[in-house]
Length: 91
Image (tube, rainbow, N blue to C red; front, side):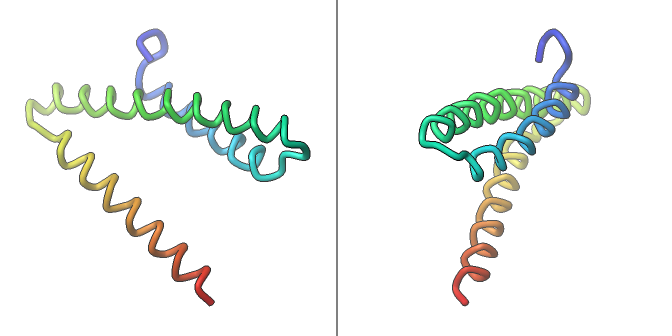
């Protein structure tokens, strides 16, 4: 993120995540599944760090504390997403 910038890291990470998730779902063997899950974890971790770093950049630019709001909205989004999937799977 320091070399290419947080915004570019987020874009690249999002693209890589969109390819890695289906790779996990359609892994033909146990070994490729484990490798794809490991790759997903690495990419997701890099994406998470870049997301927090970019939030810090935004805080500095706006001279305002925003990180708690970002984390709260991330958690609320996770709850809404999990709830929606639970409702869809309950039928």
